[in-house]
Image (cartoon, rainbow, N blue to C red):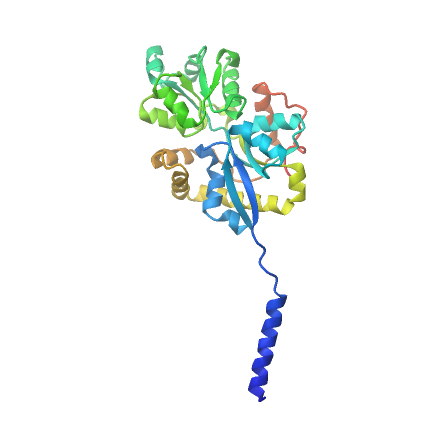
Length: 330
């Protein structure tokens, strides 16, 4: 064998040894997220999926739809899913009852839009320009359609009412699922008021069947502005056993936040891909509302205190729950 042949053979041997020693790429970690709602306030997990941010951080994510907090919290606590989206007050209530839920990221602030049937609003002399106190006072004695009784939107309604001097018991709620059914009920006059998440209130107004009573998402009720409402959570037990997966989820959501805040048109297009029946102009207006979405997966002690204040105002008993026992990594 001449020199060149021996040299080529040696290179092939070295290459084979190098390939054998190289670590194989780990397969993506498969995880499921239980999602509570199709409101635009929950577009961040969808952005992370469609933009490949989960895959970037080694996750193969499936998002499954459940019926509000009543579906996501039991699924998480029972171990049926590793990650779940939920709203703040029900999450704290679950922890007060021993749920051991740990919040790993906020996803949005309070998304509610309270809308009255236009014919009734006209009869009462209520317009979107009427003083907020007058608009809210018109809710007394009216049944309000809500996504899920006992869910976060009901707590939001209770806080909005109580902070404006109205006893929430004076405004009964009726569960209507999904949001499209709330719009249908308002359209046919089966209910006088609905309190859906963004942008379904805007859709009712745009269609001419509703008058905005309080656009909480739009900042019309400053007392609840900016506090984390929609949350991504794990249980302490699962998170501790899968800390790297939790970190990967946080990193993917952070990428989604960065994308949304730097690319409104792209975020609106992805929201429209997720919810094609909602006009993209309405989605763009909702996403560009400003202040609706967090810029960081971190939750500060001040934010947690605001969540506790909200829960207290809504009538929830969560004083036994503290920051360190509710926020991941604290």
